[in-house]
Image (cartoon, rainbow, N blue to C red; front, top):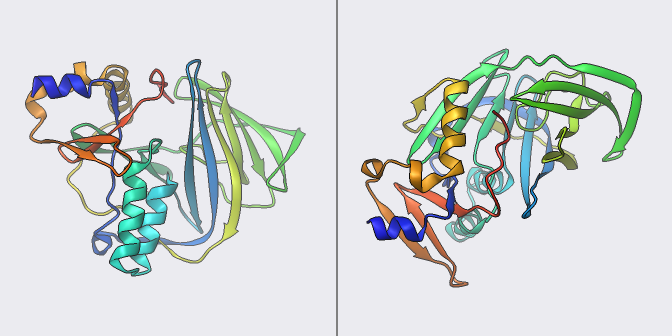
Length: 277
């Protein structure tokens, strides 16, 4: 057991969501349109690039990894097993997987976060309100839309956002929301975390809550503090006694991937770079 832990000790933990069991999910809004964002983590050692999806409804918005969104889409469309398995493998192979799912204005005025610290699933709520300062004299085009500048401080970082007044949806990537238009780009002051819209399209589909799963309820501060400690040195801070199962799978390209209690371990490309404190 200890030998196996050492072998995978350089891995960083990410949640593998199967996307199955949609019957356990509940419709919470209807999507009007959706926005795909690239998310870049810019480090000294490497730059990690993720693709994420924001489903935007009349009252709420749901932000998650794009591969997870695709898998849920084919399951909701009742695709055949071969097609579903294809997207499951896509999620499984993904080297860069944005693990939390964030539902904005759910419940009203709050943000619901569903995340993981191996070997457990977690959930917490926090207030969605941000103190934005808007600069209408500063403008740039993103995805063909005129966007205006806004700044705020959140999670120990200073954020700059660019929002489109023509898209009157008070949502945005990750936990960033509350402006009078959709946020199409956001970055921290060190340019270490950058979200940018690459595609906006109309859509009409159900926005659903996550499949029911046993989750530990936490507070935002307690969870973020614990997650940042664990991810900085995962194998040192994961209690060995909490591990009930460990499996290693060999993919077609001879890449080995590991799971602890069913949670996928993904390689951390460069040092862990927390998005919030």
